[in-house]
Length: 402
Image (cartoon, rainbow, N blue to C red; front, side, top):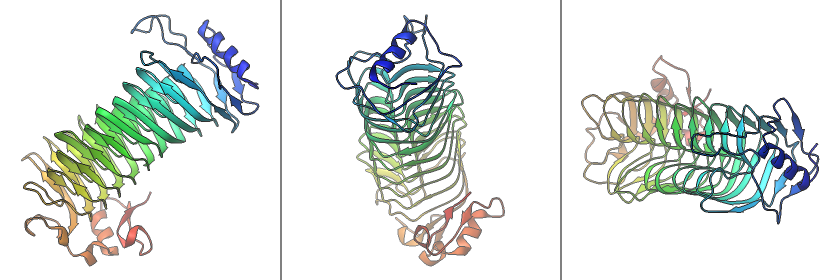
């Protein structure tokens, strides 16, 4: 049982000495404040970038619904900064952390800096985080393992690869939860849930925090690559970018390398001072998008798209609609701003009052047609049943349901 700050310090010291606590169960006995303590994260990375002599925490930590608060670490050159520094095959659950202020260099997490094959569930994190790269409200870098039913609030900021829940998701890791924190990136790969997904999964996730960045900015994730998957997600807050070719999307900034985005939507405003802004994805390459919709306003200097800004090679887009307004520029479109000959798209619709240059863009329907039960039937197209309609839901427009 962990009953005091001294108990937590003792745990940290033991793990730093190489005690892994594999198979050991810890549980908080009450709320604990770490105010005034010089904190060493529980679990430490090794002596070099290869992780030589890593000392991870491998046990099970049950917060019991109690709170650890007032943790402060301020070292701009430090890596692996968090309540936990390194976990492997660990379990962390039912834990609240609040008034956490962390400043570091690489791999900074409000709960865990680097989580390897770790299961995290039912955690609430309130943080102020600042780092350079791989910074996340719950985890900075996640390899395998999972996060479920967890919530982040506060602020998360980094130069690159920064997300409300996780900085980078890789190795088949799966993440679900809600972000309410403001997320800010000053270079690339910024997302409300994760900065980068590389061969990982985001599902059942909601972003409600303001997201701003420069390149590859998404309400859910900035960059998805290596056959990453994003499904059953929604962005409900404003997303903005300031890069020249910003690739900003209500859901994903840049979707690439055989990745899949499905069953997701955006209702937040998406804007760029540069080019390529869209309701769903700023840019896609060799990937697939299906069952998506946008209700948010889209603005950009050029190449603003209701669904996608730039469709790169071998992009497939099927079943979706846009009812959000799109800024009128030379290369804007109510659905897909830029396409190539290898772009395949079908069963896409938009409100014809949004036609930008003419009504010639395929998929124009009247407002009444778009907001109808028949539109849900058309979107399902006999291929799926995820599209439903109810006059009292989503403003009377079709929406997605499992």
